[in-house]
Length: 178
Image (cartoon, rainbow, N blue to C red; front, side):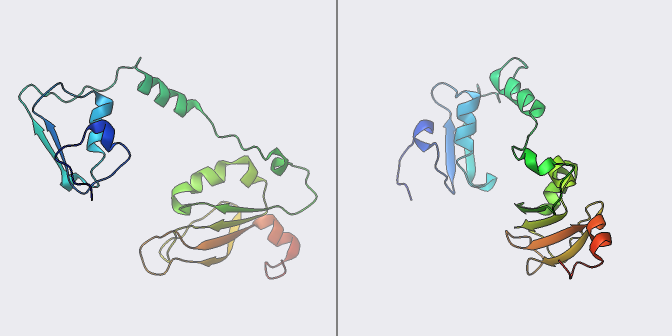
């Protein structure tokens, strides 16, 4: 608990509070970034109270030439390139197993199915999948070999699932052999 009659936006940066009162009735209006910092200190919208004067106008969306707009455009153009190029070898003579702490398999399965490292792997072991018994996540050309689900119906940072490439199963006959 922080006992304060008032706290500046700058002083509050980095902290969170259950209740935040933002008084815009006096003094100069904050910039868009300061307004964001002030409003985002509240842990929920229910705990955010804004006192405004008649001169207050919500900030306009950023112009295309502003730094935030340019950064968003740049981020859309950046592609994640894995540094593990040896894992993309097409002429591999060994089985390749990828273990990945995925933090919600359902949310990231599209990134997995389109990645070069994954497409050249034989076995996937995903951890922290957040999957429950209600989730049926299919990965093309792979068979689910085993899984440990989150207990209950609410996804949590728990769970594991193993997939084996169909070609591997054809070669060995059963995943019990692996």
